Length: 124
Image 1: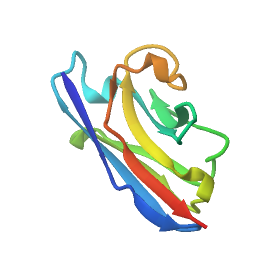
Image 2 (image 1 turned 60 degrees about the vertical axis):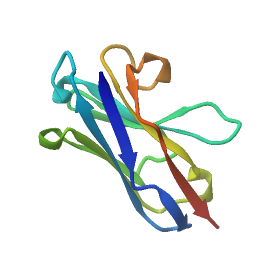
Image 3 (image 1 turned 90 degrees about the vertical axis):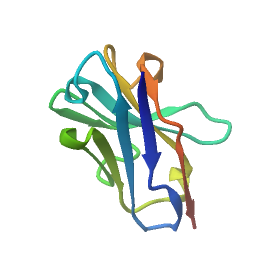
Image 4 (image 1 turned 180 degrees about the vertical axis):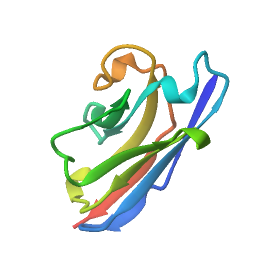
C-alpha cells in the first residue's frame, strides 16, 4: 500500500508564493520514478481538476496555471513538489497529489493513489 502525504498549504495573499510537497512511502509494484504523477485541486462545489503533472520526461500544466506553477520531483526522496507563484484568489482549493500507473494524467479517475489534501487559501 502506498501512502502520499501533502504539506505546505496555507493562507496567503494574492501575488504570494507557496511550495507544496508530496512525500510517498510504502510498498509499490514499481519504483517511484517510474510512475506518472500529478497535482489536482478541488474548490467547494466544483469537480477535482488537473493542475500539473509528469509522465516520463514530459511535464503538463493546466492553462490556468501555466507560467505561474512549476512541477518537480525528487526521486531519491520519493517526493514531488508544486511551486506556486503569483497566486490568485481563484487558486483557492484543496490540493491533492496522486500517482497513476496507466492512462492520462489529466483525468483524476485514472489515479491509483491519492494524498489527503492540503488547503490553499489566497485572499485578495
